[in-house]
Image (cartoon, rainbow, N blue to C red; front, side):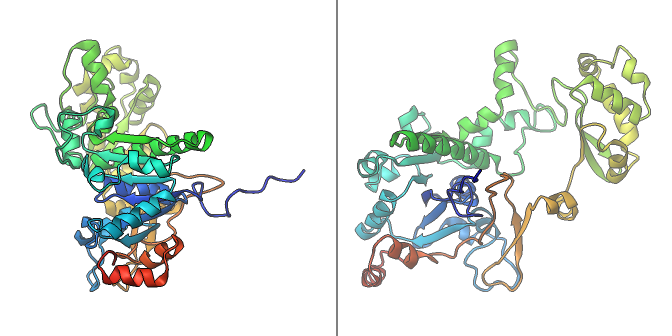
Length: 413
């Protein structure tokens, strides 16, 4: 029996055939569109004449004299094309409108109202492209979905982490809320926007009708911190920072090692029994003060003391030999240890790309979503500013002389 033929070229990615006009900057928006690009979507990044603000944010390679972009931009803009357009000019706005008319998706993360002032509101764009999926990620969402009293407040990762409840349960003690290290206040909303966009695209393919997809950074962070909502609702208590412990599970957190820390998470009594034997305390597997999770939560400090009596005199590697594969366990890695770990090499999570202006390639994080038939990939480095302006405009139907004239007029770079 003949096998069905693939609908996209081999190696093109599951989203091949989707065209995205990317009007985003900084982290949340570019992270979302990069996920789409990793999986084969054609992403046209529309930048201001001076470029995305993260182009000037390092770090830069020591020998990079070009400095078109550094590590920040490289890490979240791979697999994209860049065109530089003056959106304050009539010609620039007309270019963007024409590109959007031929696109499946547009994504932006301006403050609410900016696109309306440019004449590029969703309601305007859908008149000529009814199948358009329009995605936004803003600090406090778009008024179309419910106008927040903070709708005009600018926001970054640290703001959404604070107001979404994440910092309020993170820190060494109840009085010291702490920022999470990576920009999860941007990247988690970006992933939720990506899910929303793909859901809307699926619907548009069935009905021919696009829709507006709105994610507030604060909403996404709150959704990720879902436990604080039910804890307050069910018990009336207000969760606070818990250090490296868990309020409902024990042991579940970080423990001192001779050369750092390790994580151990025994969410079941069966895992606890294995851990108790591994640390030389089999008596604690059957003692009624420790045999059940509820008992261990009540006696958490004694549990922690018993584990750290074992762990603090051993290195992370030695503990891994004792616990790895037996209970949920992992050493707390530095980036240097991540670079040395074979897991990340075999999973292709440290990918080498060209850095324009430098003789030495650099490494960025790879594609974490693994598809068996149409895998995503890092196909090309991040683009230089306006690197693809001519190619994109020629493909959109502009003539060579029109491009020359628009460049002379300052509408494009």
